[in-house]
Amino acid sequence: MVRVKQLLGRKGPDVWSVDADVPVLEAIQLMADRHVGSALVTRGDKLVGIFTTTDACRALARVLHELHPDKGPDEVA
Image 1 (cartoon, rainbow, N blue to C red):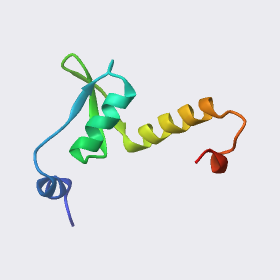
Image 2 (cartoon, rainbow, N blue to C red):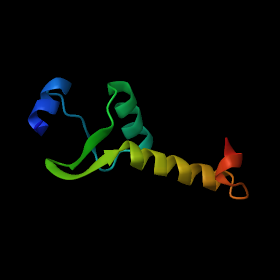
Image 3 (tube, rainbow, N blue to C red):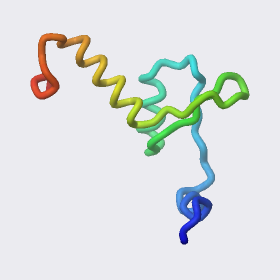
């Protein structure tokens, strides 16, 4: 059975984090630049969450809906 540590060993030891107060766009940019699907969210030295690509997609959907409230999901693109 494959263990989590084996998968992590293939990815490398780097762990990326953002402060809880950074703009969402900054977190998304860090993840895109580093080619990662998530970033740990910290406040000071305390872990308070994980920001994922799913969170980024939800934020994008919210912004698009705010910009085009009269259009459905298929009409925005």
